Length: 178
Image 1 (tube, one colour):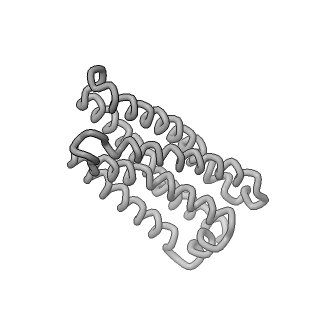
Image 2 (cartoon, one colour):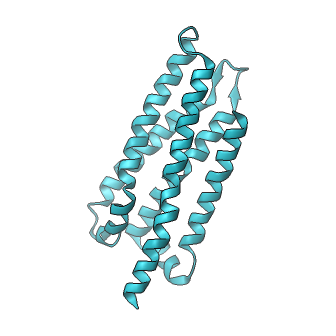
Image 3 (cartoon, helix red, strand yellow):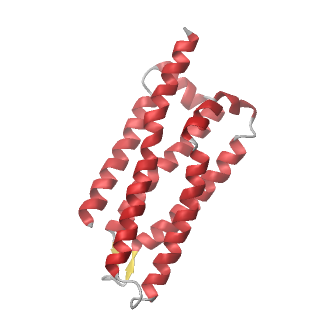
């Protein structure tokens, strides 16, 4: 279990690094994503979505109190709050005047739906975790670990999308300008 968590955490933070490399390839893309308000806001919200698997994996690596209470339960509740906040911020961003510049990217990524799905999933995971910490007879530790593994892998797949879609969008916009 620790091997999976440490591997996913390393992959997640590597993906975050690649994301920033993609956004800072040249001065034009750097200006677009770090200076302008809607693009900068959208980039930061994508960053939060991409942070999810690394944070959940780190939460799975830390064990509080000799197996009495697992820290991934707290991490999943924090991620529920973070995902819900991301979803709310994306909904607000759609009402801003400059949203049209990133609407094509959001159509391809659909980060708002990923954030909402993450929020619901992490709420369910945290409720399951709290319930399982008190109902040891019904839910065994192996079952908890299998469910946690599934969440970690699915969130990792979701976090790869921006790294794939952002460069394609950057190439399209540079071809249109030429």
